[in-house]
Image (cartoon, rainbow, N blue to C red):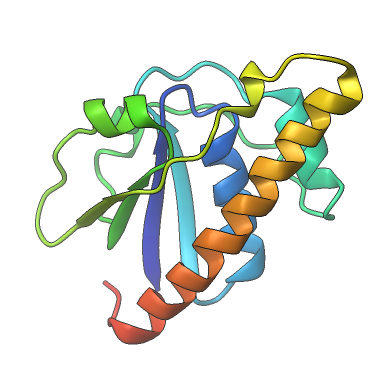
Length: 143
């Protein structure tokens, strides 16, 4: 199975949502993981935004990239600029790419405006990453 790691600073929003989307939409083709360079906790609004799609990430927890040191990935995708700058080296033939998305946790305004930011990022992650990973998984034999 093709394995991808989504890397973000805190592993709180974008990387968690990406992991949940890929494991839901591409189950059986791609196995997604997520981690952070400075992990914190999964943002409750990210959990809520995913629940609206029927995807449960409430069991997810924020992990350090060091926690996945034994895993081999076909692809590592940084989803925030800071993670791109601090991305560690990965051994072997691991492809590393950047696909930046705005941090919905920085949104301000009413609760509805903040949730709209989470939904917008969630939907952008799905629109950009699912077709990309479907194509990569079909084009390259996985480990």
